[in-house]
Image (cartoon, rainbow, N blue to C red; front, side, top):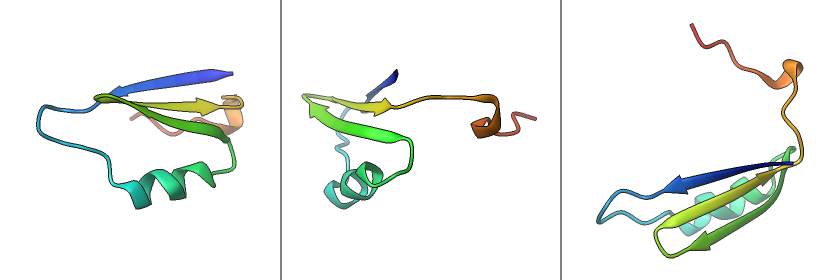
Length: 54
């Protein structure tokens, strides 16, 4: 399992609809909002899911 801890910039908050749609992603098992952070729990990250970083 991989956990992404995303800190929101000062004055910004996540869009509730975006969080809902994120929860329905193939690899996303859970999404939590805590204070100024969004935690995204991914089932796995593998070679086949990597994007091109160039």
